[in-house]
Amino acid sequence: MKLKNRFLLFISIALSLILSVWAILFYYSILEEVYDEVDDQLDNYAQLIMSDFLSDSMSDFYSGDGSNNTFELYEISPEMAKSRPKIKYYESMIYINSKHETEPARVLDTYFCNAENRYFALKIYTPIIETHDLRESILIWMIMLYVTLLIVLIVINTIVYHVSMHPFYKFLNWMKNYDILHPIPLDNKTSVIEFKELNDTANGTLQRIDKVYQSQKMFIANASHEMQTPLAVAINNLDSLVQTDLTENQLSYIANINKTLMRASAVNKSLLLLAKIEGNVFIEQSNVDIIEIINSVLPNLKDIYSSKKITYSVDLSQCTLNINADLASVLVTNLIKNAIVYSPINGEIKIICRENIFSVSNKSIDDKPLDEKNIFIPFYKSTDNVNSSGIGLALVKAICDKSRLKIEYLFEQNFHSFKISD
Image (cartoon, rainbow, N blue to C red):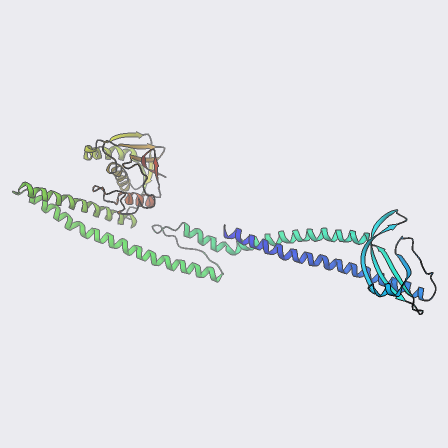
């Protein structure tokens, strides 16, 4: 769940609970006030009736006509008087003669004693149909107020959240798109102290990472450059040694040594090229015709690896990529060579150039897909093939990143495929 959704969920739940409790308490407080007012009126009316009765101006029993306030007054025994509360308020239904129907009423039930120690019960009824209407109106308006407040508070919190968290999402987007080969400074001005500290910490960390990366890249470039000269000297000396009188056994040893040195030289050149790519040596880019490079590279590779008896399926229609011309040649050569090296004897390779998409596919040796997470890491090998330097695909990935091209690995119908597009 996203932070925004989690925040709004918790805020909504908290506000719903708080507003619900407030609405219920407020509603019953209003009702309590209404009933207090009605009860006060009943109490005043009871005092008037008891006063009139004690002054002998009323009969022993009287029942009103029910048009407004209705009361009942009758004598009770002392025992009954002592068994009931002095005063009680409750709701009941009364029959209204004039309307010929029953309506809800508020009732005051009490008793009193005259000078002769005779006890009398008094019940006063007052219709509360208007009170019921008022209660319904209060409930409706309370619900409307509750819903309105909840919606307004959620909207306000959403707006405040987006405004407050804008620097965070800007920082997050910058982190997602950060490329150590093409670093872009973080421009995220904010007055929030925590976000300032986050920006400063991220900048400091990335600067240290970039410093380590640059040092490592320079070390590899310098080491490769320094190793290239002695390797070349050693290979030349071996070539000169072959020209002398040597036995067949000695020539075999020299051939193996020369093969090893040539492989080391190839790896060293690849490392040097990788360092140059990451060092932005190849700056100029243009629309390069990939088909022309394929037609130039493929015949030579076919001759070199003719012993593998590979079948080539070539479909070339149109393919132009925006890339440095020298790197384009390296890219095409490495992809085709990688496909040949990792193809079985009598295998099949498909080379397709169509609609500015260049793909190379080779039949799998072990019928298993490659590890997508590691195949572009330098010196990673999925097999123990001695003809592989383990850096070809790393070069391809570096060239694609440098040229902002998309490279995709697929495993379909027992074929490993590498597809490159703009």
